[in-house]
Length: 156
Image 1: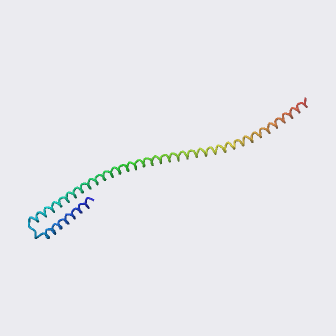
Image 2 (image 1 turned 120 degrees about the vertical axis):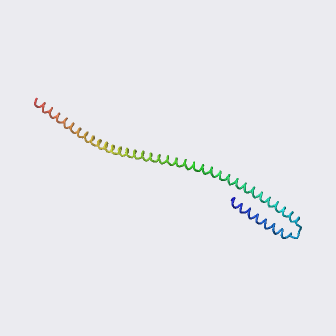
Image 3 (image 1 turned 180 degrees about the vertical axis):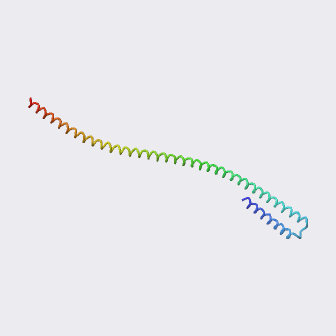
């Protein structure tokens, strides 16, 4: 932008010089005093234009400096946001890893519970079978005891 402005200023100066030469050529019939006066006016105008161009150049430089400062601050802010997001991502990954580990542990415990429930079911079936056998044996025992009592009474 500064370079463009400098080029534009140089173009204006070249144009002014050309205008000045044309003006001098047009008024070549005038007296030297008139030519000097006209040249002084042209020089004044050119000096004013140069001052304006320098002021504009300074304003552009200050504006660019201000924009650069703002961009630096914005870049810093964005970098901080990126750093924060990276930390959040890392924390989220750790949480996911812990959650996976917890899920695996719970799955393992659920599997153990399933195995234990099957074992408990088998043991209940064995207990029920053993209870039936026990009842049958008690009935046989009672029947034999009764038979022996009867035989004993008969023997007496």
